[in-house]
Image (tube, rainbow, N blue to C red; front, side, top):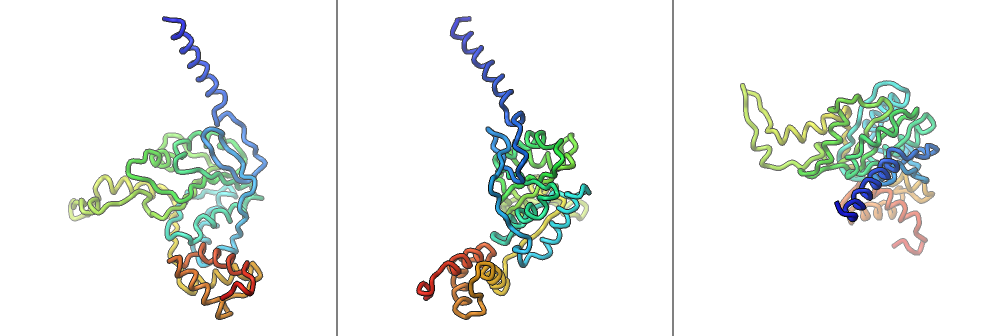
Length: 286
């Protein structure tokens, strides 16, 4: 072996030792915070200014809000609770609801860890860091969906219900998605059903896609808002911002026009309009 080859081997061995010492799982996070973000190269980083959303600010989703609040309360109090999938129309309060739960239960030990979809392959490493902590952790995956060839969904599937290791009692996964089954569905797959003894059976690819969502113990659906619900949310935020509500016909017409321009009557659009309208000067109103 040449001297150069020996140097390369020694360098590779040194790199491996350094990676073992400074891997994210071995970096102690700063636990004096309520929200964190997982970065594979740095581990758990605190979010210094988490959004302070109130449960009272989440409107027109009463059933879903009641269900996830109950589930989260059970979790915080040390009782059994379920991993939760919040799915449905965009801008209807799915992610805001999870942030509001953190605000509601942080004083009781609830913590939130934001995990990007591509980092789900690190779920085992994240859990190793937090499983012996006294706090209760929600791993939060926003806008979750997978492509057909995306391997990261298998890591999520195993953690939810499929690994030989028992899931820690201080960890739940809350995910939001516009898709109920998280994976793309194709017309051909639904045509490939077959009948056995008079019963309809989906093909294997469809079964695989459904099985991921089914591992969430609680499904919560979010539907598009009606015009009246949209205006109700607009009025809530206008009142919060000290502006005139849609009881004023001019305000109402502008609120409806704002939603029409964006093609959506979502809660997000309602808040955007309220911010725009409350910040205008009298001469800006036309």
